[in-house]
Length: 309
Image (cartoon, rainbow, N blue to C red; front, side):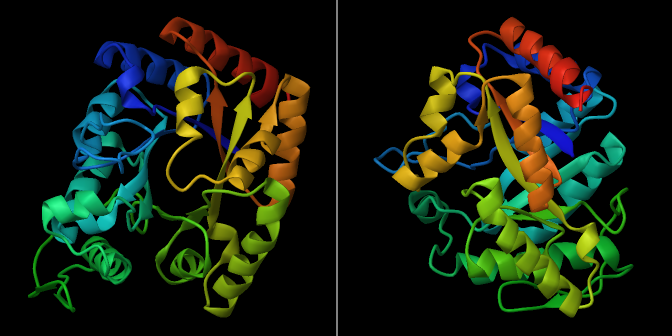
């Protein structure tokens, strides 16, 4: 099991040095990855995301943080694929993978904020089909010596698109979301799955189903990643804000409560449940009011949970 931390919402950080100091601590303490959310713009109105309106561009932010760390990976979660030109995005991610020494990943999604699509002049209704094609474009840019593409949304002649990713065959793409389409996208185009809701036990059936479908498709089920989340200790006000709002039902809130632990022993038990269900990665939520407190809690989790199992 690999453990990660999240940095959302961005508006709770006093500055980039506070954020960098915590990420450096996670790197030093054995956490495997850092997740960071993505939006291009957030129009005023009732549809604003529960994580606020502050969203630095994740590409240069990850480049900055990668230069300050040595082993922790940076996972964009979720990267809204249809908002960007896929060739440009493929080149940015490959370059970022190159300069970071292969420490980049992405949970990819088709997006949910209609007003964001409208403001950028991008169709919201066909975002799923656009996402599928864009992912195919990106994979072609990463894996073919002289990629070319002739699709519904994207076409370009045989071209050099360099550099390639450091990771083989490319930056891993975990598919975000629940339901038949995201599950199918994992089998067709993804390297892993990051469901939004559900307890570990409830997701075990879907993980088994995805692995079976991957095997039928000729893929190695054991190579797929499955990412979940675990909250340890009391939830702070900013984290509680993330648990309310758009796309969150009473059942989702109950699910999150059942993925919560109060002690190191409870956390280790929950991690065992997640492992048995098939999860390979867990994002760890630790309530905090200032960066020093978060660093202390990261050290506690590292010693009492990661290295105590």
